[in-house]
Amino acid sequence: MELIGRVNQGVIVPQGDAHLPEGAMVRIVYEPETAAPMTESGNRVKFPLVESDKPGSLHLTNEMIAEIFEEEDVARCQGFFPPPLAPPRE
Figure 1 (spheres, helix red, strand yellow):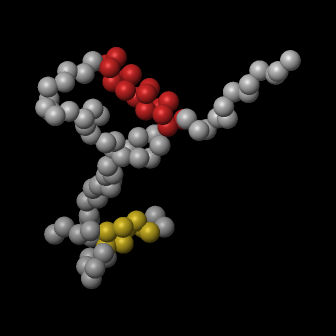
Figure 2 (cartoon, one colour):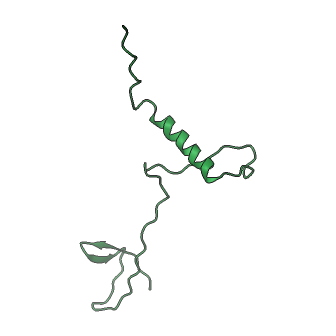
């Protein structure tokens, strides 16, 4: 028999109307809930990183991927900082 349950204040509580005899030996298998991979910002990663008319035809190097990420970071940060002050007029 396989039952599903939840931990409630340190006690495993079977879900539904399952009844086990007092003192019954049970085997517990922990199955952590899985989530989709996220970036540090909490956003899902969007693929493909580079749009192309011929998917798979572009051979990206680590350097090219780093450059793409840097360009995206710069674009995302624009507007966070005020523009530089103009030099004083004399």
